[in-house]
Length: 271
Image 1: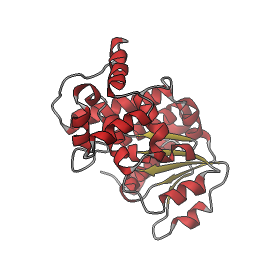
Image 2: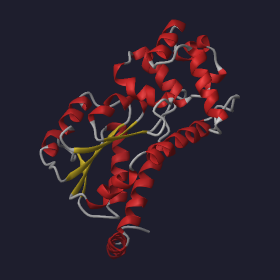
Image 3: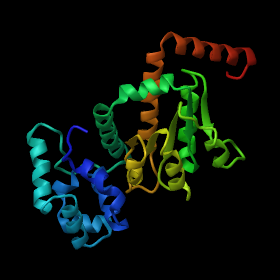
């Protein structure tokens, strides 16, 4: 990260040690950093359904003297030319997705994505793990990456528990673990098992507590204010990864994709 003192980075560093109430505040402020400028401490507390004291303690836990100091940092960022919203916007799912996509782009710009793309292209095998609402993301990633390279596996296999599949992971593999909220009960144990291996975690803000347990993490911020989640951000991240992998592999990926398309035509599988 280029800005080690930013609010989002401080929250990520402390997330694993936060209480449930503090995590509600953290989630709210990471998705809505503009609210720091627009709302009072009491209004933030009301939005997060916690006490005003809890908000004040949370701000101090992050290393700020008080709400005023945090607001001053945000205003300083705006004075440097960084975009900071200081007025109300129409609160729609699309506007929240746009903010979350900006946050994702910042992570991509600050992270070592070249090395990550190289792993996606050259690792002996890619193992992609996803349960529940993370399963469609994992399956989509597998289907797209299989257009670029061979030996991409989706875990767990239907009808199997994860133990059999984890036993097949070797040090030459690159593991991608999806952990969007409402994760399975043994998710922590899966993360612990994967510690010795090269693992990328793709999660929402509630999964930041596992950041220190994996080699790399990307946080796809979810809007907590609407009843159902949008998956625009993780889907965009997948699209970025697979397209960059395709471009890196060039002719190899193009030939594989053409072979797959030829198989579709020969088997009459698509319209």
